[in-house]
Length: 116
Length: 114
Image (tube, rainbow over all chains, first blue to last red; front, top):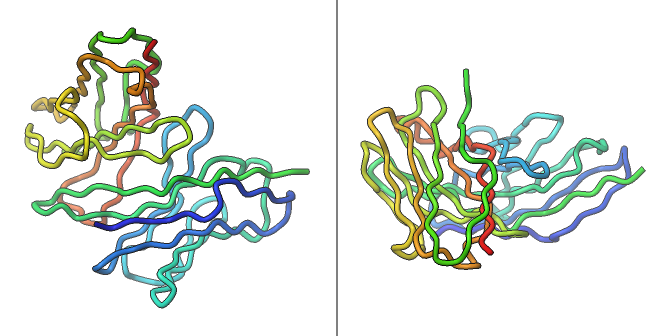
């Protein structure tokens, strides 16, 4: 089974500083990887996805992630944090269940706090 | 274009009761999945429906059951509620013929079991 590990359940940065949220995956086949964001009392919104095209993936709100096969990593970055980025971030890997079915396996999440 | 819609948004039940949660998928989507997100955790896969049948199931007991209707909407039923069933229940949809694995999520139904 595929899995992801998010290092750091809480990350705090200053406004304007670099955001780095870590995700490592375990997969026996080339994975499809995702980052989702969840604001308080809301559902999940897709930030970006890797589907075996370009290894550097750009998403919404200035976020990007780089797929590194040698490190089995898919870390999320943003050059300059904004107060509105405060939220919980989930890394996920898609598990093909056959017959057109799939499920996402999520990490435990990283809560991002942005301070003035 | 409406996204994934879920109802109700919040509900409170007592132990032993039964609950039904509803989901309408995004327009053009025919595959619906349900996830349970306990407080402070990532979402956990419950099951997936397409062509009105349960196709895949996660590690959840039979107390969790579902249904998909001809219009692709879906219900999640939980019987004999336990305190541990308190969670945010997320519905997600996708078009079955797209294999990137991306899912579109609703806002969720927050269930509290007392």
